[in-house]
Length: 89
Image (cartoon, rainbow, N blue to C red; front, top):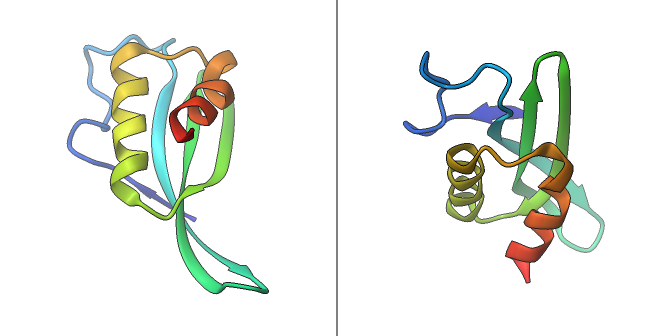
């Protein structure tokens, strides 16, 4: 699992330290029907807590778009799973 940053994802001094920080994470997974594949997930970090949604998409740009939006809007971690699900539909 590798954390990937885009230019806009790196935390800055201006960001509220209590706001969640979302990061794109690359994973190499295996499925019996598909074989090995590269997929991307999102990791959330905030003051001693962390959460992750694995295997969101094989499209890196789609997950980067989500992370940039979540960081800009300071999405509450409570809504992370629901918002990701809605964006995939």
